Amino acid sequence: MNNYPKLHNATWPGIVGKGPDSEPVIPFDTMLAMTAAAEVDGVKFDGVDLGLLEPHFTLNDPDEAKVLAEKLKKHNLVAGSLVAPIWAGSAMGTADQRKTFVEMVRKACEFGKQLKELGVRPYGVVRIDSAAGVDAWAKDPAGNTKIIADTFREACDVAAGYGEKLAAEGEICWGAMHSWKYMVELMEMVDRPNIGLQADMSHTFLYTLGYNAPEHRIIPKDADLHDREVIKAGLKTVTDALRPWTIDFHVAQNDGSVFGSGSHDKTGRHCQATDPNGLLDIAHDAGYWLRDENGQLTKAFKHICWDGCMFPNAVMENQQTWNDILAAMIKVREAHGWKA
Image 1 (tube, rainbow, N blue to C red):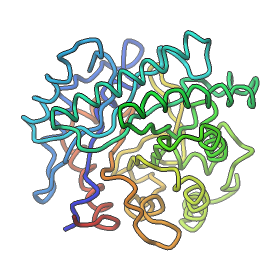
Image 2: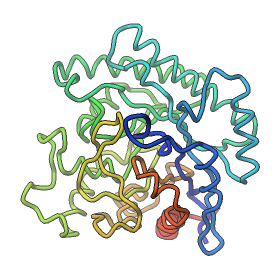
Image 3: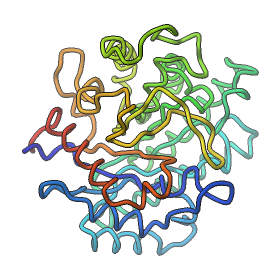
């Protein structure tokens, strides 16, 4: 059996879209325990990707990494990619906001370094976004993209000091990152060897439909989204453009709609792995990201992660949900993995 890429679950869905104006946050220990309990035919998750967000984490506690490492070892899991809590600032904001943005990247990189030294983080990147809305960006597209690129460049230089790569999340709700073409433009403008894309199968599928960037729509408005050939053609265009930049990858399902909850803006809806309305063939379509234009494995990253942000708590607190997710990820690895 293929043992790469390693299979990870995400812990931040316990926080994202939750809170006082939505459902209660699901505690980190609960997310970790349910991940560890998932099993399909003897196969279990190898690790978790972490959102370094309160109340799951505080980066101001010097013992936080040590406490986390003990928890991971107890559950026989490792850490992978880390989400930097950059929203206290903005890559497109004032000088002070941009300074805060870069400082949050530094703190995330420092935390990642500690986890490596503690022996529980063998791979992974630090994830960022512009922390800026599409409407605000659209007031001055060229000028605002330049500001974001300048901030990302500074963050890359800080991350390089820790041996880290930064992955910008391809998602339709982030200014300058809300279309596949704008994402390529931003990556080229940043021009640093340690910057890349975090591709999520749900979010990046929305690129083909032109949400928030109709000028870059690929699949025609009148197309039948249940026609697999239409879906495959759209995905091929997007992945041919973005695959060379992709250094982190989320397996997910989408039904062609947008969704937001709590304080989170509407973005590509994450559907359950078994959702009958899902438009993606998860195992097949992951191959557009994991294989190059000639069908050869890229092996561009050592692990893949499932992201189920904004699932209802009743869904996330059901162990079968995580078993179904793990089963879908195993199929991805069987189709596009390798043995090492």
